[in-house]
Length: 587
Image: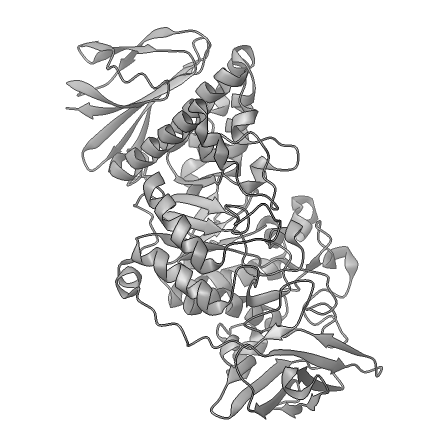
């Protein structure tokens, strides 16, 4: 290992040295614990009695090779601290862990899987001028074998069910909430204890590789949620690892996050190398196509609060990590969950930016959902909530998310948020999604949204698939599938997302009628999007330059009659209440 790179925060492959690695004779264990008095490795192979580890290099690293140890063996480090107390810890660089509440690390053979995705990896791109339609899932609650809280499908079993569903439904990427090991189901994977360990809830390392491999062979990209900001408080993991604050801040005013977890101390080179190596590990070893990075605002500002000022060390860390990851993996997608107005999140590091490929457009998401929650009178007051996004859209490369965060904790699901009673909620939700898919930016939709689920997401239960036996929900699902396929088919809806020539307002100030119209363009193809978000049916006129006729592609009101007349570029369109339509413009 490059020790100097490790200490200075420039290492991306520390996992190839640290952790438990199979050798011809057994396993070599290595751990970084500079302030430990001495360390033993304990496990099934020595009846948990302890084998002494030796200081190596500069005395901050410890190593021992134990003969005869096999894959899938349990182990921990017994770390003796300066005050002669000791604590058993899982391996920070361990490649597997036991199912909670147990906490031992598990030796894994990472070279066992034979990959069959060479073509996918060779042709993969970061998707900036492509259609990116992401289906976000929580692996443990998309479907379950039974109603039991822990009766999960394995990674391999999930692949066999999820991939055909994605293909039928028109999604070309799946984004999975964090799969790194975590002790508390309710944290959804965002409070980790094993940053290099695929959660054992759904299987082992080889099975996760097979899941990704199967997705790639069917043309599905796989993105994983990654948490570079904080870690779980459990005392067997990273906290106070060698008797000192090795990974965290020593002071609670900046050391404890808003979620009650420990903040990483990003000014330390060893911490940077740990996190950068974890990010590279998922991309290199598991062939993930991208990382969605959680809570980036908490890296940019101290405790995520702009009033406390910028966290210069954390900003420098994220620049270094993103720049390094893109050098190592040019075709991956790095996405920031960031609700701040910080400039340059998706600019290259070489141009002074943070180096992400995409940023979640939280402003668009909040404004849009607030608009659709209220009735027509309030919408007149809030008319420009639907035009505001385009005033800043070209400042960054934005992705439009309706994520898991919007369907929990009393916020109500997407369809439940919609204004009106039962029937009108479906009208509103279909119009909402048509507006979303016509708007510039890549797309993300959380599981259950596509079937019009009214119950908030619960990580202990699968989605309410029985809803599809009811006509309104089945109709809604079929509509979303059709909208997805149209989005994937027509380059005008995605190819020039981040170029101003790809979008033009045709109508953006009709406050009284609550109508909007815009055009999407790419490669000579033109698509008209027109909306009526009032409670009145309208005969509405739209002027389209250089247009001979238009062809209806999809109508959110499900009435596919091409009710349109034209003269000299002026098109009179019948728009039912709470509806939107997409037309292909023929020149």
